[in-house]
Image 1: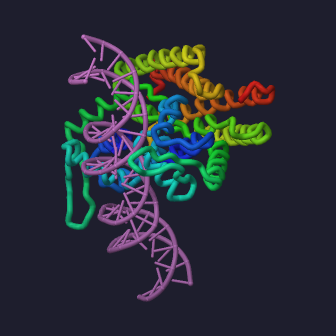
Image 2 (image 1 turned 30 degrees about the vertical axis):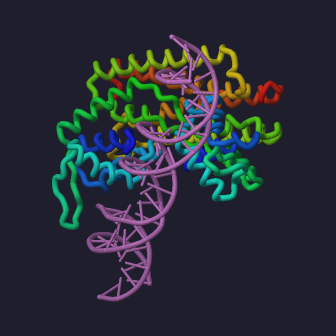
Image 3 (image 1 turned 180 degrees about the horizontal axis):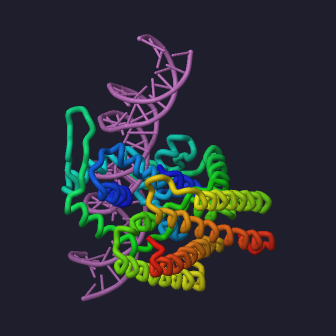
Length: 177
Length: 177
DNA sequence: GAGGACATGCTCAAGTTTGAGTACAAATTT
DNA sequence: AAATTTGTACTCAAACTTGAGCATGTCCTC
């Protein structure tokens, strides 16, 4: 499974044994569906795989009921080394919008400016929603520092908006594309 | 195949028929491996699939040699509607670093500050490299506006760096996590 | 106490992604 | 000119992802 799925599952289990559905719920509570992509089917796959690898163990299994998994020492180890890895590694942000950008020369100027204006509005809207979410009460049970995800997201969207406005100017002046 | 792979292939073929390997080369030339993820295995799959769907047609095929694909009118149509979609749609940026962030409370303060300092340095380095790339001569054959990908990337990394510095302050003052 | 709506908990087949590996050609070295 | 390296072009099996769908429980409502 993807490395993010893996560490997210391990991280959730750090606080105690859970079954698959509960892992999913925990992740949804954290809003992980917004900034990661953890299809719930992958959670069950991940749990089984990591149990196979010895990072997890089945605590309460089988007989038609739920399968509860607990993290092992090897699992905790793996969690920590991956976590460090994530802090040090800069992976270029992969954003489908970069693809739109690549083909900006395939739209004629009025179309392009229209698209840019549209995107700017969308970005403003997203930023507003993020700010509202930040102002609102914490989701019950989610740790406080989860807000940092929103703050970072917000900073990055604002950067995109600034870039976009500047680029619109250059398109208008014929500098781009 | 993923939507990005699809539009990237179509976009490359817009300029004329090519075979799989040449599509790959074109994408590498554009630096697409940095800001998208197009495993080259997926290119061949994508070409075959889209030929099946009528978006491409085989121009020069079989007999052990290369298979050359050309874009059809349906393909051009599909390309344009997807391109518009990308301009309008804000997908939250999915960055594995957000995962590291989620678990910041699992490191003790000295470890965390160390990790943050490390990341800040990495970010500075990445920014420097991007700036160098922007200053350098254009890769032969890549369109000029490809630079915008780098500019946007750079703006977003800088936003992350600013956020990180501010968050370090809050960690030092005990406000986080 | 029957019927329905919703939550819980998971399975599995169909599809997608991956990159090591294959095969041959061209260029370079020895 | 044989041998080796590098480049071109692709295949394919193994692994992963996905979400519709199933089975069961729980709570309401009439």
